[in-house]
Every structure is written in structure tokens, then in C-alpha cells.
Amino acid sequence: MVNRTHFDNKLKELKEKLFDMADLAKVSLRDSIETLKNQDIEKAREIISNDRLINKFDNEINNMAIVLIAKESPVATDLRKIISALRICSEIERIGDMATNISKATLHIGDQKLIKPIEEIPRMLSIAEEMLEDALKAFYEEDAAAARKIADRDDEVDELYGKLVQELMAYIPQYPDEISQITQLAFTCRYIERVADHVTNICENVIYLVTGERFDLND
Image (cartoon, rainbow, N blue to C red):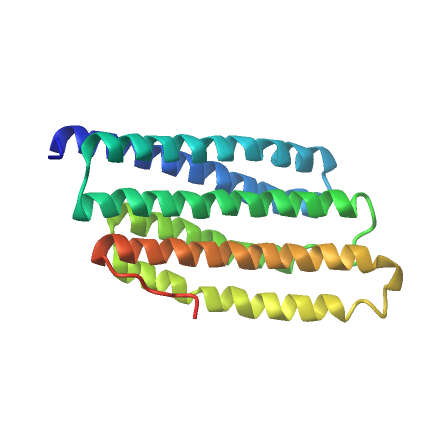
């Protein structure tokens, strides 16, 4: 039998740690693009190093969930709350990985002169960031309807991704010696597209939390 007060307090503690983890991932993601724009090698290395802090949150949240399940033996809705938090934690950890990957792309490019200013990529990230912020709010408020609407914005990111990669590939004949840089910029676009996919997965878990049903919003 679940001790209601104790369970609610422990679940609240778990969710607070999850939001702290998300804040760290959001900062890393935003900084990674600024680092790319400014070709800030030292900052890129710092972001890569800080990924261990996000991974530490991931481990702590998983351990807290295991203890909560073992000690409280939650059922039905209570168990869904823990499972949803664990799955969302996993998605946030992967979003942190995308920030690391973007920073690694910055290291690969180094101090090479950029073939063009980094302008469209931040706009693409802005949509993904808004999606993430809104998805976390939907999780906090247990708002399935909002989660569905947020996932719809993934199409905007996909469209920008396709456009940007096509544009970058068109630069290859003009800059044949910069294929490595062009490839890294295309990878960066892909990483941001993946962020939006992970946010969509968060939305799926919000819907699962509220309804108990699984939906594939990535179709």
C-alpha cells in the first residue's frame, strides 16, 4: 500500500531533479550553438566535459525511481508517473548528448573560416528549444492536449532541416576544400532535428502519463 504523503514527496523530489537536469541540458544546447557561431574552442571543450553532470543526474534519477518502486510498490497511475519520469529523463540525457555532438563539430571545424555566417541553424534550434520548454510544462501540468500540439511543431524543424542540408550540399562545388566543414554543419543540423524528435518522445510520454496509452507522434 502506497504511503500517499511519503510517495508524493519522493515523486516531487524526483521531478524537481528531472527539471534541474533539463535546465542543464537546455543551457548546454544553447551554449553549443553560440560556441559554434563564435568558434570558441575552449567553450566547446567545457560543454563536452559538462555532459558528465547531465549523465550524473540521469543516474541519480534512475536510482531514485528504483528505490521508490521497491519501497512503495506503486500501481496503476502512480507507477505511470515514475515510468514517464524515467523515460523523459532518458530523452533529456540524449538531448544533452546532442549539445555535446554540436560542440564536437565545433572542434572539428576549429578556426577554419566559415563558409557562411551561422544564422539559420540558431533559428532552427529556437523552435526545438520552444518545443522542449513547452513539453516540460506539459509534463508538469500533465496536459496531454498541449503535448499533442507541441509534437506537431516537429514538422517545422524537419522542413528547416531539409532546407538547410540541401543548401549546405550546394556549397560543395563552390568550396571543394571545405567538405569537412560543410559535413560538420550538416551534422549539426541533424543533431538539432534529433532534439526535436526527443522532445516529441517527451510529448508521447506525457500522453502516456495522462491516458495510460502509447501514441507514436513521430509519424
